[in-house]
Image (cartoon, rainbow, N blue to C red):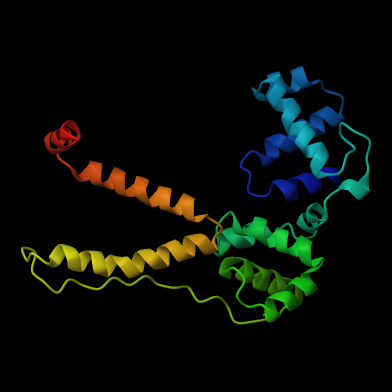
Length: 223
């Protein structure tokens, strides 16, 4: 049961099976050094993973087992282990399950969470959609209509390529699409600073990639 809890808690983590194997090996009496050598990790890293596992399940691995210390969030992850796959299948993002379990922990039960979201429909769209999908799987019915997938439309250019106002028109065409993209990123759990930095970096990389080597050198050299 403890190992299943850990699998549920680590969810999307690509190293979940390795981490569970470390805990299982430790419970069977293997030392940190032995586990480190077996899995190609440092001893300190093995200790960190096992200490984190101990906290997640409320003890019983390194410290005395105290079930009351285990977070309700952990119990919910065990009750709904398929949430991660649902989010991935419906392209809701890897952050959405974390938000879902946070909301579920606050509500105390799936029923209360769904009732809360019915009364407050302005919750994050992707978290709300994941709650709907979980309810649908558990109860066989949808508590509200499925989330509409917004399609980002770009207005076609109205000027020929050599027109002096074509660049400005392109900016105006992309402005609303960019705003939609930013909003969708925010709904998925990214902060405004993270979104802004990501967009700037992507624009910089795209711009540099399209410049001839000489032009890029001249621009950087004169800056």
